[in-house]
Image (cartoon, rainbow, N blue to C red; front, side, top):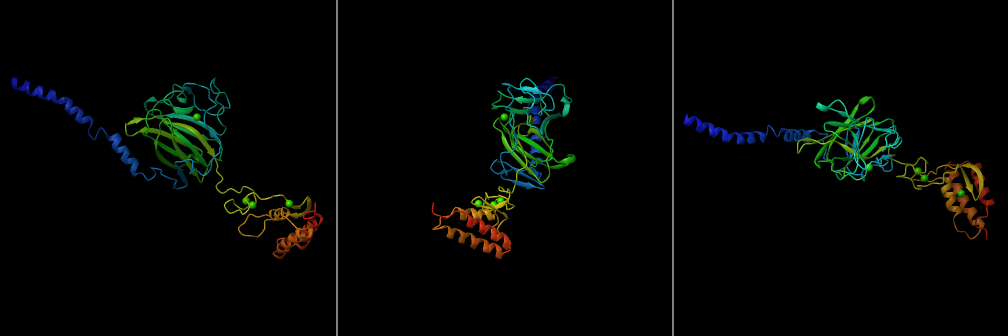
Length: 345
Ligand SMILES: [Ca+2]
Ligand SMILES: [Ca+2]
Ligand SMILES: [Ca+2]
Ligand SMILES: [Ca+2]
């Protein structure tokens, strides 16, 4: 008996050590280790240090890298709640509550949550306009409960560029798993962003095809817990990648005269000669005939004849190159002659 009691007490004393050893064994830390391992071997898990293109998508981690600014941006600041308030699905321009009157959310965008796991289905408005707590500045949209996917949908087909801040309330080591869908629920791509915190982590995406839906799911793989995903400053639309500011058909990146005179007909000192204002044949592109004529009009001359000679020289070149007809050349010179440019005031 005595011997058995002795062994019993030894075993009893060892139980806490066995439990602790077991709990901290690699088996129980598998969430952390296995998930992180999975994350790092997936090619689409990008530690996005700079703009990265995968397939038809390009991801951005800073606003400076993003191809444009100034697209419509939902910042949720029309909400007037001082503290978090729940919203039923969906949150969009039609949402109409005391702290968020109809029309507060931009047209063309909607926010919903889908619940997964044991908390499904919905029994409460889990989409939150968060304010006043957890260090959040202003208003953001965030999932209230855990194990929920935040869904952002775009109703128009004109969204190829989206950027946002990803926020979390509890962890600055949240991993946001992001799926980007096109028309017909086609998965265009997916990525994971590590970040969060009340300040937010920048995420931007550019797509060759219209983006219809973005889903975001948050998890803290370091501490092994759900992290409800939140967003703010959701900018969406289409960046004009190669703008042509003056609309002359020559892209800004090459345009010799960025803001050309695009008048339909060449005009000299108020004399409209009916000659179409065409692009000159010079390289680089982007110089309109009226740009050249305007330059001569604004010149300084000894007399009127010098101005007319200057115009004549230019239109002779244009005519020789076939840019204008002899009749058009005559019409321009006639206008130049009729003007008082270069004449003593
Ligand atoms: Ca905001
Ligand atoms: Ca141009
Ligand atoms: Ca131009
Ligand atoms: Ca002119």
